[in-house]
Image 1 (cartoon, rainbow, N blue to C red):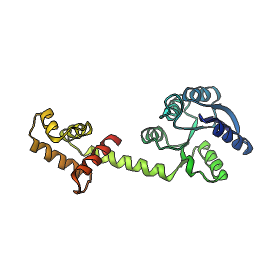
Image 2 (cartoon, rainbow, N blue to C red; image 1 turned 90 degrees about the vertical axis):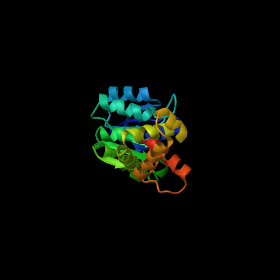
Image 3 (cartoon, helix red, strand yellow; image 1 turned 180 degrees about the vertical axis):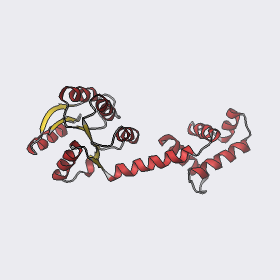
Image 4 (cartoon, rainbow, N blue to C red; image 1 turned 120 degrees about the vertical axis):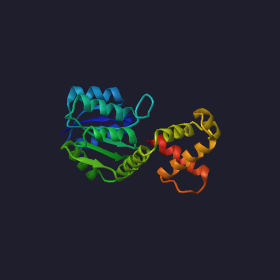
Amino acid sequence: MRVVIAEDSVLLREGLARLLTEAECEVVARVGDGPGLVTAIVDHHPDVAIVDVRMPPSFRDEGLRAAIEARRLVPTCTILVLSQYVEERYASELLEAGAAGVGYLLKDRVADVADFVAAVRQVAAGGTVLDPEVVSQLVARRRNNDCLATLTARERAVLALMAEGRSNQAIAQRLVITEGAIEKHVNAIFGKLGLAPVDTNHRRVLAVLTYLRG
């Protein structure tokens, strides 16, 4: 099994390489950034690439975006994301591009070397391996999207302005409707998003968070 490792931490990168080599895998490339990952996959056509999410230069989602690009260029390459973080948007995109040969594990939850190597082999063979926490967050995101889809165009406009921090009065002025109408729209938004009538300000924050996650 031929492996590419994309990890900006030199110690972790070398540790993974040694671990996999001892498990009789061939590590054909070790890189520390997104462009390096794409180049390595195009050049070597590995059986599997092990990828960290956050890599240089901004340490946000370069690794995952590079993995999606590499998979587009070399569709036969399988991807195992190994990260401290769940990047819901790109994880969904990676899975929607084809769940076969895709894995997403959280570093802190990988407790057994044999299980990790087995996961690498499973993904390389075209299987899917997902950490339960990843599944939980992706399901929550899908629920958010489903709820947002029930909003009317006007309700979405109101929610977007709420996300900008505007008060009901400011939203009413912006949309040229009465403040009473805005209050009705806001209450409708709370209902459709399943936000129980407790503290109004708390519900407002939760509604905005749902909008931003969607």
